[in-house]
Image 1 (cartoon, rainbow, N blue to C red):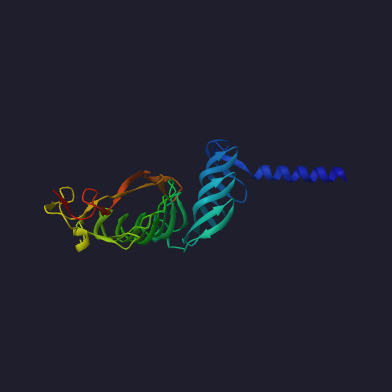
Image 2 (image 1 turned 120 degrees about the horizontal axis):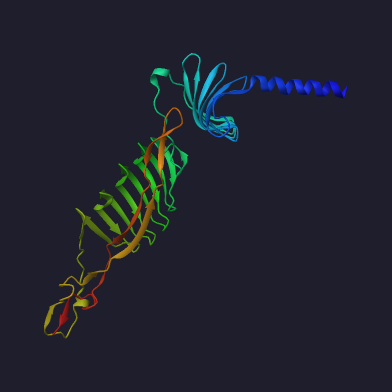
Length: 298
């Protein structure tokens, strides 16, 4: 009985080997074509298994895309016998995502999501990007750029909520981590026409990128008595206040990303960038020379 089992096992193994063979190239650690019997694979191999970019042809469809450890793994495209195509995503041989099928004539290059994209569509659509710096953006994208309504969270606690255009802030409200806010327009990603507001309720206007200095209100008591010779304060020039801006630091970064062609090859590099800067929040205090009076006695 055992002899029959061994004979059957030998027959199964030999039959499998007879129908599975390397047709061309290097099917161990290179590029080649391998006939598995039920399908034919052409592409990259590692440790005698499909691994890398390749094409697997089955009886009723063909899969082109990424393989790992012998299984479909990553982005790819299924082409059916009738010419219809389906953009798909595999995880260890299991299809976990399929986009709408498109006709062969309507084929467009597949674009890979950025490694920073943790949710949604960060190419053209609505998504969430978590940058290497820890900053996070949640909102609309067009051609990989922040465009439309969105919220940008900085690691230092600052937040901008509003409209972006071509990756830059356009208009909205910037909230600093100390409670100050700026609401208005931006130019080249910087404050332009709007209003700064302090937690105390005091506000300072910005017009065409320049701060409009507020005028201090001097009461009759502040004008003082017994001062026979009053002159305008040389420090504040009679305004009774002086500028004492508050500095805010921020940083941002993006990783390298790439697009993927129909064969799974990287085709276009989007070079990662990083940067940062220091914002100055307009802030005014009582003049240190005249004590907020606007004049001094001589």
